Image (cartoon, rainbow, N blue to C red; front, side, top):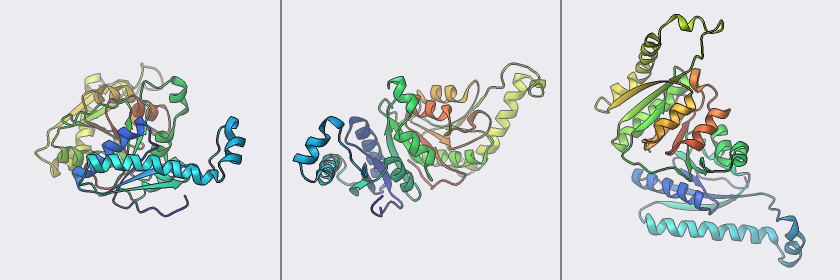
Length: 307
């Protein structure tokens, strides 16, 4: 990154001028305006822009300073985005910058002190080859230092829907739970806490687990979730809270619950059903398949937020 960005306490959103990015930009702008917080829009371009092979020689020889023109076009794209935002959100404190660097790195670094970093992503309608390769959103969510919101091109807006949070017994889940409580309170919507378990069929490796009946397992998991929610319930006693213990794979349970949700919050790592959430297939499945925006928190104490 060639310049120091002022990201502290801001909403930060990445854009490349595409329709997918525009959806993420509008979501970030709306939430920033509601919160009365500033928004920084970043168009991150390659440090070494290389045109396609078929045009390389012609561009380099006929257009003079290609790098300067490349940056100028990026600025023009950003200016259009900023103009749209100023018209739609006239009271929003807004700034746009073109930055040269690696997009995932720049946005992940911004998450160190930003209130929230927002990125767009391909949804479940993307070709399988694209979904397997991942993208900027996966990289930012994986390497972020603070909360990151992923808005797919197929995310549905449901402002009255509940905030859904994935819960297990890990320390990382506590940060997601705290974030989810504050967000549900700010939005005036219920909170739904989901725990998914899948111990598989009985065999020698999990015989101890199956000494208990399914009802006993569910009861034990419910008690665990209640314990994790206790602090939030005490802080927000009037907030409606529902616990759902689901037998099955975590990613399937979360995507199913996202259908009627306004927002989903998950911790970066966990144990049991949410183990390695941002390190493997579970994270990519949830981030791409969820029907609502997804916020990923990092660690036990993410930045206080209510988005």
